[in-house]
Structure formats: structure tokens, C-alpha cells
Image (tube, rainbow, N blue to C red; front, top):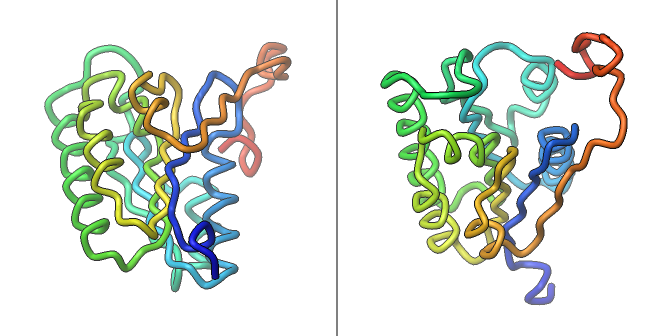
Length: 176
């Protein structure tokens, strides 16, 4: 294996378009297919979404933990929302230190930082302290310029057209 095959990079999926979480989950499945252990920390969501149900099929290689209370979407977070996110941040730091997982996904961490559930400085600390062979993926709208600057790969999802604009609600198995 070459150095580039063993090095882990920092990926950011951001923007207002659909597909950030879907891209990260696709990467998680690809990694699991290669026998890599994946850890996913969800910073906003709480509940039994379709992707959570699907990822249970890979529970020997993919671990998902939720650190959102399922109600925070915009505005000023409640102290309980901040506590839940801080618990997630602490857990991610311990997972990273163990070096057992080769892919770590921080789902909606950009949103969590934008609204003060965690600090941008916390994300930068994870980036700086990332073990050499760990792939770190950070998703969510509103990625900080500092996070983008420190990433190796940044994809910005841009909406061009979406049926939601015509009144189509989120559908089970497609959007939720």
C-alpha cells in the first residue's frame, strides 16, 4: 500500500442541496465493504430514521450514535441541546483516541457549530488531532470557512430543482 492509500483525509459535505448525509452514508457503506470500522455521530437528529434502520445491517462495522434531541433546527438552542452535543463531542474525541475506527463521520456537525451547540474551534481541534490513518467526514450546511480551509476535500451541494418546492413532502425511504 502506498502512503496515499493509508492516509486518512478530511472531507466536508456542505451546501443547501440534498445529499450531504446520503453521501456520507454511502462512504460509510463503501468503507464497511472494505472491512473498515466506521463511527457516525449525529449531532442534530434523534430517532429511528430509515438510514439508521439500514445501517443496523452493518452493525459489526458501522456504529451510529445520536447526540441530538430531535427538536433543534434553527435559532437559539436550549441548554439540553448544548449538553447533548457536548456529550457527542466528548464521545467523538474518545473514539478518535482509541484509533479503532478508520472512518469517523460527524453528521450535521457544521449546523451544530453554526448554532452554538459545539464550537468551530472544537471541530478544528478534531481536525488537528485526527490520527494519520483516520478519514474524518464533517457534514451539514453552513460549514465554517476555517473548517473548509483545513479540509482536504470539500463538496458543496447546490440545489438546482427540488420537488419539495411543488409541495411534495419528505418521503420515507427517500428523504427520511
